[in-house]
Amino acid sequence: MEKQNLSVLNEFILMGVTDLPELQAPFFVLFFLIYVASMVGNLGMIILTKLDNRLQTPMYFFLRHLAFIDFGYSTAVGPKMLVSFVTRENTIPYNWCAIQLSLFIFFIISELFVLAAMAYDRYVAICSPLLYTVIMSQKVCWVLVIIPYLFSAFLSLITTIKIFISSFCGHNVISHFYCDSLPLLTLICSGTHDIELIILIFSAFNLVSSLSVVLVSYILILVAIIRMNSAEGRHKAFSTCGSHLTVVVILYSTLFFMYVQPKSSHSFETDKMASVFYTLVIPMLNPIIYSLRNKEVKDALQKLWKKLCKACI
Image 1: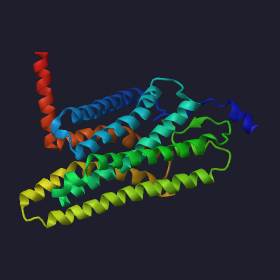
Image 2 (image 1 turned 90 degrees about the vertical axis):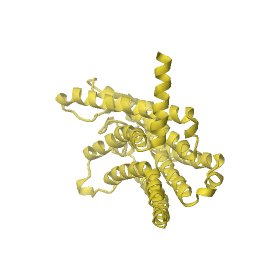
Image 3 (image 1 turned 30 degrees about the vertical axis):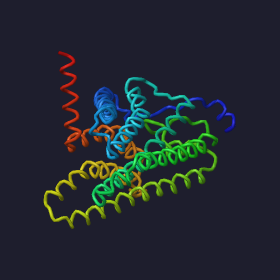
Image 4 (image 1 turned 90 degrees about the horizontal axis):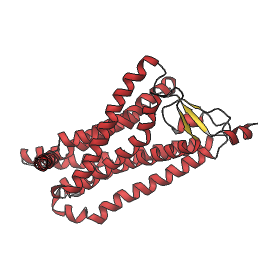
């Protein structure tokens, strides 16, 4: 009977962010504005770092990829979530659910390791400034983003395939606003031990390894800054790290809140709130943080705005 149910299961029903009717319209407006701001900010950052000659450095190379990743996973989740606020029954086709899960896993893992690469970039810039252009060559920069992309794609495919070749019990209601691995596991009637072990091991590895690179880089940066004799040099060093450090703290705080909370207080409702934050809010905040705290980006924005104004006139 379960195999028969598997053969006819061709769509899932997403529960959405909330089932309260009075919150549907306000939430739609709020998350629509957040999503639009995220799209404009991240696409703008990609275009800006491509067009402005002053932003053709390793730091902005990584920032461009961070913006691409933020654009990717907020788009993988955001539009479908917005649809849930205006439809009576929010369904997603079986194959689209698998695609959404694989894209989300790919982008979220890529973000962790690109942020780690950015921390290493800041370490080299501050601790070895004379060798910076040699160490952080274009080839090295590409290696530091291609490897995370390949690794993320591998994990994404393994997890998605393992879940979707499993036997579902005919239940198709996902207690989330997108196809996530943990809610999907509750719908599987065959053994999920292997899948859970894969998710646990690689989630721990991804968080610990990427955070270790960030922590070691910033410890060495802090030691180098303390040894600086010039107060101006210390301020400049801190300012170059401020934006990245802010982004790292926000993302890892959200992820640790989601994965390290006790089982007794763990629920899909808290997962939803955390997921909303790192799928929509953080991708919106990242370009804002880099724009407000970075003089070069602000100067490039002003220069581009002046050119657009002249073109309009």
